[in-house]
Image 1 (cartoon, one colour):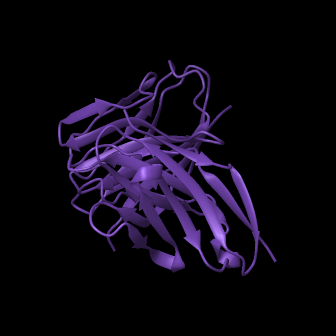
Image 2 (cartoon, helix red, strand yellow):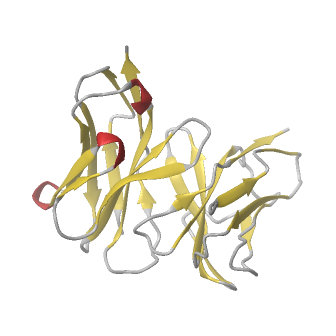
Image 3 (cartoon, helix red, strand yellow):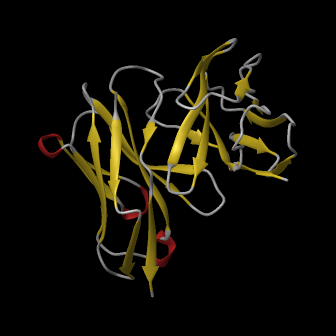
Length: 115
Length: 111
């Protein structure tokens, strides 16, 4: 079975400060890892994903994440927070090379940006 | 424009009533999913379908039913057996789990 743990259900950062949202995963097989963002009363949008290859992946809106197998982590970062980054962020995992398999989501981290 | 359409946006259920949430996609995706979202619990998978006329239970299928008679459509029925149906319901579709496309959700509340 796979799972993800997101540390911190709420994170607040000042505008212009570093954003760091933490995600640790558990998987018995090589994982695919994802970050999704949800704005209020909307569905989720894919921010970025790790499948194979480079462990540092870049996504939309200036976000990036690094897959660290030794630490079983996939933390999301952005160098400088924008007011528009305020949203809920979800880390998710699936099994690599299993085609259309289901995703398992974390419980989410709500990011607040302080002006 | 291609995408996923969920309707209605808001839905109210009376005691003992079954209600059906609609999900339609024109992305030509084989796989479709229903997730339930509760505050602080993230998204939990209810049912998923990888192909027409076939579907599998997710982690919290009790009190729900689905059908997949057409590739474009994956309706979810919340039955009277679901004792705590108040939640935000999200439908998604994909070609592979490398990217899911989500609808804008349906908020279900109990009267």
